[in-house]
Length: 176
Ligand code: APR
Image (cartoon, rainbow, N blue to C red):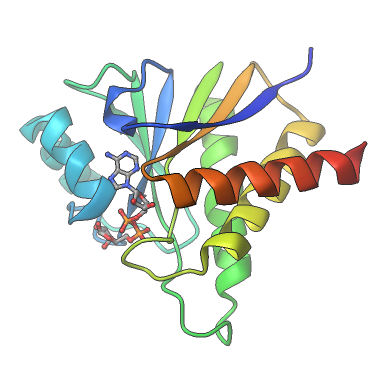
């Protein structure tokens, strides 16, 4: 059974999926951007749960309950801060997508929605991030999709949506 990989425009806090992937920071104690939106929508229990987890290294992933969100689980991954491409940022970003997807598979998830990791406050160039994200997602599901049936990137704005759609079609044609 092939895993569908899609890009949609929307607000990830509304996603009715098994897991959403949050663009967190290593403290896991919330922040602005999508992290702030997820914490606001999930409610105060999320912060309490994150406190239990302690910190998370960039490129790794941790999971909590979704609390007041429609999503069952929240996977938190601190992506790299863009430093001009001199500090292995691309490898760390790929690692964030890989670890998040492997953790979702371990949790038995069938549907996973990603936010666009590191392309906001962390300043990672959008087209490069989209290429890394789609290539990494395709690699992980080609290896062993587990119960996964659908992976989506939820873009908050049109520019992000276009970047991931372009990356996805390029990745598809490379495979095809
Ligand atoms: N739904 C989906 N995507 C969203 C939402 C939302 N509700 N709100 C913001 N986004 C998008 C942004 O527009 C951007 O495309 O999430 C993407 C990631 O941007 P950031 O949230 O700034 O995340 P990032 O660049 O990884 O920086 C992480 O910012 O919020 C803090 O605590 C976070 O310190 C961490 C840093």
